[in-house]
Length: 392
Image (cartoon, rainbow, N blue to C red; front, side, top):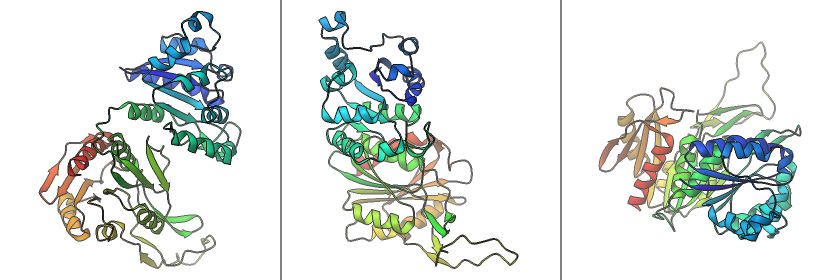
């Protein structure tokens, strides 16, 4: 059981702290809450006390606790300090080292890992000052999650929504996971998600991919101490803790990002890259008329896996993925030889794998084929990360 100190900042997203407390407790951890003055306008200390079954703290000026330096004790007793929601104001104070209330004093006094889940208006999140503060905090070792994108209480749309409580819990547990450090000093490149190849400004060619498996692998590698660069196609997933993320849209953008991220010790090419793109995407929306459907001239996209496997900057270990609907192992063995990869992770996608939370994979290497039992994608990721650590 781990002890989480949860700081609830002032913002409409504070109501999600109630569900986060419930999930932390359900996962077997204890949680103690600190609520800022702004946070108390959105969620009451009594509610959080009932859910956490612990005292809730709101002020630095509690004479009984401060006689015993309570703010120091609180900050040191936890295994991790989580800030959710982390408002623009709170991030700014954290970056500047300001300690003008209980929450900020705790953050300045703690010697434990700190994780912040931002929530604010899209323009506030994108403001240069906020981005500087986030960069400063990350440089100081604070795990700052990427906010979700979507409609906001203010009526605007964009990045700035508090990540869902389930995603925050996953990030907390990843930050708390005992890292063997087996991959410390290693750089691993991961691609994930689909690519979108435009037909016109509103239509595109794509493969079905949620990105869940690739994101899970990136997180598992980071948990083992690796420096992970995740190149992600268009997906709506939170960035795993400790992972550097680069967002792309097309196969050519992904190929360029992979090349720019080298050198790497290993590469795990999980992305479902579209094999073809239109030769000349229309500049305006193609209108549906009385004539026959327009003919699309398709051009082959760059083969990112094969190009990487034969690159002058080839990583020591190159791993590809094969999504098949028939003769899964046979096709994977042929793909490994054809692409020049060291390993191929093959799976049958004829069922509910794409978008689901479980996977049944076969690991194809020079030594043969190893078939794994059906596992949650997070467990597949952890097992593969351990195998990568063994190989490196």
